[in-house]
Length: 293
Ligand code: R5P
Image (cartoon, rainbow, N blue to C red; front, side, top):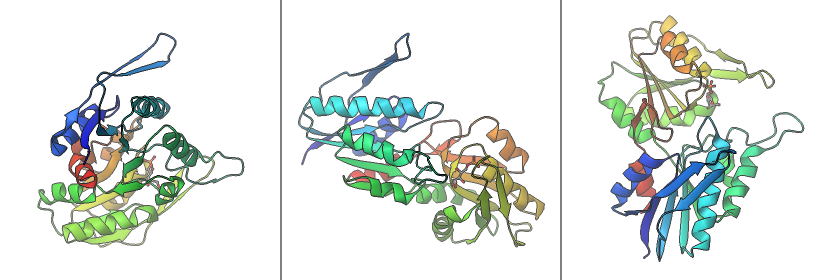
C-alpha cells in the first residue's frame, strides 16, 4: 500500500497537520504568497515520491475563489510530479448551496467547481457535511462525504444538558438534527424556513415547542450571515428555553453574525475546524483520518 503524505493547503494548515498526526504520516509543506498584482504563487516544497498525497484545503471566505485556484495549482503540480494517487480533502466546500438553478439563467456554480477540481487531477474527493448531497453526483471520481455530527455530539455531551431538545432550523438540516439527537439520546424538532430568492431574506415558521426550562441545541451545516441561527435562537428563547447552543459544522460567520446569534439568546457558538476561527472547538481530523484508512 502507498504511504500517505499530507499536504496542508494554505487555507487548512492546522487541520492538515492535525490530520497528519492522526494518520502518523509525512507532511509536505507548501510555500504560498500573493504577487503585487493579486496573482497567487504556490510551490510544493518537497517532491512527494511513491505516495498517496492527501491535499487538505477548505474553500474559505472572504475569497473562496482563491482557495479553489490554490487547490487546483496544488493538484495539477502533484500530477506533474508523478504522484501515484491524490485525494483532495475539501472540508468546507464553497458553492455547494448553488447546486441547481433557482432562477432562470443562473450559473450552477457548485457543479462547475466540481468539474474544475476533478479536471485539475484529484483521483478522489472527501468533503465534510457538504450542504447538498446532490453536489456529490457531479463527480465522476470516487467521493465521500463524512459527518462531524458524532464529534459535535461528543463535545456537547460534556455539558450535561438538561432534557435537551435538538432543533433543526430548517428542513434541510433535519437529518443532522436526527443524527445528533440519536447520538445525544435526545428529542428533536424541525422548524420550517423559507428564503426569498431575490433578497435572501428568511422567514422561520414554527408551531409551539415544548422547550420551557430545557437546554436547546440548534444544529445546522453552515452559519453564514447568522440570520437562520439567530431567528431559531430567538424563537427558542421566547418559548422559555434555558441554555441555547448554536452548533454547526462550518462556522463561516460573516459580518456581525456572532453578535446577531448571541444577542438573539444563544449562550455559545460551536463550530469545527473546517473553517478555522475562535469557535472551531471541535476538530474533524479524526473523522477524515478514519475515512482515509
Ligand atoms: C441553508 O439552507 C443552510 O443550511 C444554512 O441554514 C444557511 O446557509 C445559513 O445561512 P445564514 O447564516 O446566512 O442564515
